[in-house]
Length: 197
Image 1 (spheres, rainbow, N blue to C red):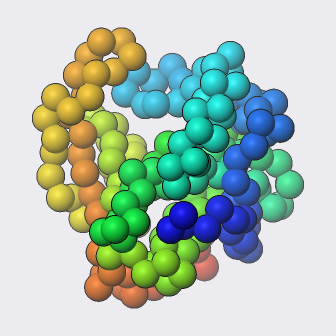
Image 2: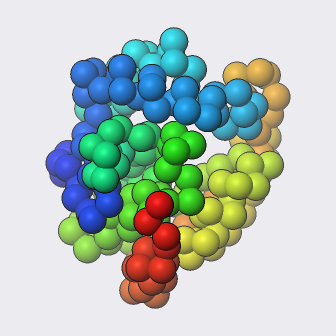
């Protein structure tokens, strides 16, 4: 395995490798906001959470690591994120499958989660590039990715078939190693400036 499957610790969040025992807490988290109803997002319905977690555990065997996101202020699981499309030979990975309970929107949770994930790959695993992918029409996600400091590489047209049968155009963003110091400074500044709630 290129990426170590271990917890990542911050001031506001702890990222814990996903386990079956996290299913019930994830069901509670996903009910806060009901984001599975967003046609352009890939957020699991509470009834599908067991399969979602099992799929993540199966992917971990190929080096892709999924985490539950624990809000350290409450010690409650508030969402999930993962490394996927991990390419050890080319020192690249994508970060995605990220969703959160509405209760932590506009809090430090997402900023610190992304900081921890990026820092781990660039500083502990010497990554060359990290990708983010989202539906072209998911403007909220695209704005959040751009605010991290990632740059748009391009759009893969008719890239994926969605669960409703529509075709997804995928916006692909990346951060490369030479950009990491500036991106890290940006994220640390945002984290220090964000209201705690």
